[in-house]
Image 1 (cartoon, rainbow, N blue to C red):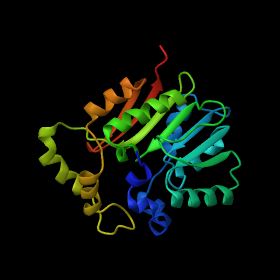
Image 2 (cartoon, rainbow, N blue to C red; image 1 turned 180 degrees about the vertical axis):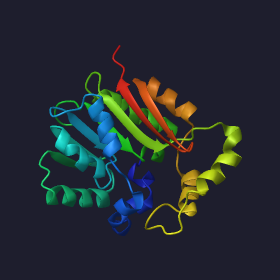
Image 3 (cartoon, one colour; image 1 turned 120 degrees about the horizontal axis):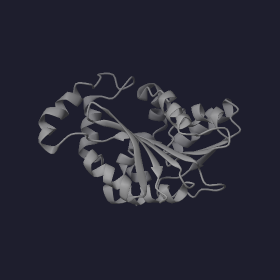
Length: 227
C-alpha cells in the first residue's frame, strides 16, 4: 500500500505543515501523563508513529531514554528535524517511514504512540499495522492511540454527524472546517468503535482504558497481550 499517497495531500504540503501545530491545537500533556502512569520512565524507549511535527515526541523526550519520531511525510519530517535540532533533543531520532514500512533499530520500544493517523489506512491495513506494532513492542509494552473513531451505532448517524459538524470553525488556520470534516467522512477510513476495538484485541492487545469525545474521537491505552 502507498501510505504516502493515503496520508492526505495537505500533509505533504510545506505551507500547510508550517501552520499545522496552530491548527491542530494539540496538548501532549495528557498522553505523556498516561504513559508515565503506566510505568514509562527514564530507561524507556518510545516510538511516535505518524509523529507529524513532533509535538508529542518533543514533550516525551525529557521523560525517557530515547524517542523515535516516525512520519511518512517528507514535509513533516523536515520540520520535525529542525524542531529537534533547535531544541537540542539529543535523545530523539527522526525517521521517515510509516506504519507499514518502519523498521525499528535497537532495543524494542516500551511504548508506541500514534495520533490521528490510523484512519488513513483502510481496515485491512489497520490490522496489518496494529500487528506490526504488537510485534515491535517489548513484552508487556504499551500502545497509546488517539484517533477519529465513531463511538455510536449506525442508526445514530443522521443525528451524530450534524452534531460533529457543529464543532467546525470558519478559519482553517485555527481549526478544522466543516469541509474538512466532510472530506474525512468521504475519503478517509475511520471506523466504528465496535469494529476498531476487536481489531486491537485480535492484533494482540488488551485494552486498558478508553476515552470518548462526542462520539467521534477516542483515545485507547493498550498493553501487548503476552499470555
